Length: 204
Length: 204
DNA sequence: TCGCCCGCTATACGAAAGGATAGTCGAGTT
DNA sequence: AACTCGACTATCCTTTCGTATAGCGGGCGA
Image (cartoon, rainbow over all chains, first blue to last red; front, top):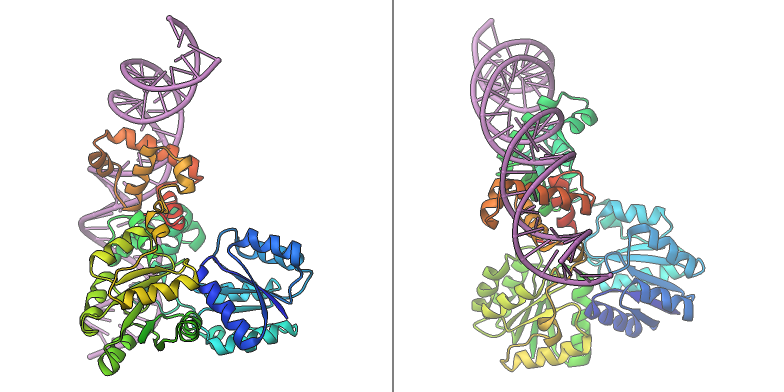
């Protein structure tokens, strides 16, 4: 069974592939970014399973996923990620990914997951998929009201008060009020800073 | 030789520890976050080497580093990180870290680095430390002029044009101009969106 | 040397944001 | 029933942003 693993962190790539080789008896090829993975698939492909890191140079979300799937002649291609959340996993699976492997999964589960996917099944850890979205019970959620949260989302998109008002079907003045109270709660002195704080908290 | 490795990604933690055990003959203990690492150091410590992930639950930069160093009775404590840049590494080493291991290092170098640190030396990969700062030759750097870059930094801090002007010792109108051209280059429609784009690019 | 681009400054104006105060309305408390 | 509280609207006013247009000086290449 031949596997290709692409991850920009050499330490992670090396140790995971060493683990797969020893514990699973697979033959593992390594790539340090997406273009390198493409090269390998073209020259040595198709592989029985391709594992792509979701955040590495050259990866552009789900577009590259389907491209890789074609390059690997419809043999399974799965995503692996340390930070991505449930929604991204769902989109990936819907887009035809053979599986989604969070780096928070146990190493021994990895072996069975890999075997499972090679057999053509779709894999995703149940506990990960049933978990709440990270931002659903985010610390900021309790500080801000629902409305303020919606307005904050608009701020993060760079929308003007007027645009936010249109989207939420409210008056512009109301948005201003929300922006003001929301800035106070976040200890931001203006909308831009509020948006940056939300971004730093990992929101939106 | 007893090593403690703390990382919130189980897959990474497991495979790295397996690698250290097999290839290096170390006895490796694992912790899933900082508090768990503290527990282990209290009960089973000190370890000959402690590896702490820089971004995991409970870690608060360098404060926790020195706390861990005390808990481990001044035996070496090193940081390991996937995303952190050179400046963080330098601060960590200055704060008494036994080493800084980027996840982009080769697995076989890990073994020698670990042995090196256990002997009481300070370790950091030379290529990593001499590398340019990630944002020094960032794609945006070539698109934007130096001034525009400085102004963008101000935007990301949520500063007003007037404040940025004071900091850069320029006139407010000049800042406005830079903001405008910078927004055009970034395809942002206002300052907030420009700041968000910079943030997404990993700047500041 | 001429033209040209770049960084900077200036003036001016409309649009947007920010702040203060006040009032309506409905839901839930006491 | 009186009360609080959150969400919403309204008016008024000041500050800040965003855009346009024009001018100046230095550096650089044709």
